[in-house]
Structures are given as structure tokens and as C-alpha cells.
Image (cartoon, rainbow, N blue to C red):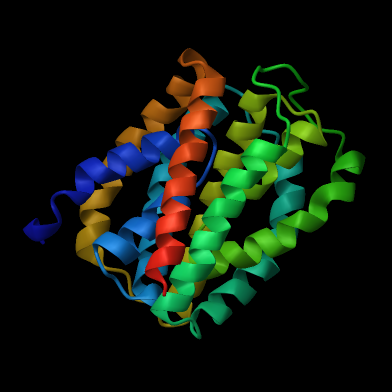
Length: 252
């Protein structure tokens, strides 16, 4: 177990980076598990979901205290997401390692593109609660995003934050808070489904990573309020692009 000690500082960095922009840690944990730790796809997915449940729980607790979660919007999204998570978990059983790296790499680069192309305003202007009737028009994006979540352990946030900002006019802090709460629910349900289907996480990695993501989950939401948001997003887009290119290259 001691051999995975370095997972602890890595988990702090990943959780801080992800929670500061409202994303689930899976978008960075999965590349780390597949490329650096060389875990098999099925072990990487369920291990990532276990760790995200802890990290997103920590970040969500902070956001709930700050009243940054739109619970009505979250309920709508989760109602649509749960069937997709189950479908994704089932499909994950048929993915080989190189295919998973290719799909994940393309998804990571797509996430970076969504952040670039969504024309989000880098301020906190907007509403704190969404008109639920308006949300129904754009809720369809939840289904493909939830399938990817169940299959690759990435969160819904990568797809939903641009929609929440550009289509639903939700303030950035509320969008991030809502997505962190969604990431908690999705990772918990995804981990449970994978366990029921016979998944087996690497408990040594989980034991080292959970303290790290708990710490990072407290740091990230506070960074969002103190660091220039545009700079934060541009740095994250750059990181996602590099990771995505490396995953695609590594899959061949």
C-alpha cells in the first residue's frame, strides 16, 4: 500500500483544479490512472468513481453552505442521468484499454472546446435559480453526458456548465456549485452500479487519494472566488488540451 503514497499529493492537485472550475475529478483522474498507474479500464473507472464521491462530497458541502446549489435544476438533471449512468457502466465492460484512452482523449479535447466555444462571460452575473421550464429545453444533453459518465467516470459538469451559463443564464458560482453537487450524486450512483456489476476498485489507491481529494475539494471552491476567473479557465483549457492529445496519441 505504501507504494502509492504519491497519489496523495496528486489527488490534492487534481481535486483543487477540478473543483475550482466545477468539474468532476474523473476528467483528470482517469488519464492519471490509465497512463501513469497503468490500471486496467474497469479498475480505473470504479476507482475513480470511489474517489470522486469523497472529493465531490467535500466540495459540495462547501457549496451548499454558500447557497450556490440550484436543487430544482439538479433534480431534473439527475432524473434524466440515472438511466444513462447504468447504460454507460454496462458499455464499459466491453472497452479495451486502448479504445478507452482514445474515447477519453477525444472527450477531454471536446471538453476543452466546449469551454472555448461557449462564449461564457468571465464574471458572476446571472441568476442563482433557473426557470425549470427553460431547463427542459436543454436537458437532452444530460443523457449522452451521463452515458459517458457511467462508462469513463467523467462528470456531467464538463457538458453542463457551458449550457447553464450560455443558455440558462445561471451565474458562474451557482453553475459550479450545482455541478459539484451533481458530480457527487453521479459518482456515488456510478460507483454503486459498477460494484453491483462486479467492479473492484484498487483500495490502496482509494485510501491514499481520498484524503487528498477531501483537502482539494475544500481549496477549489475558495480559489474560484479569489483568482481571476478568465485566467483560471484558460489554464484549465490548456491542461485539458495537452492531456487529450497525449491520450489520443497513446491509444495508437
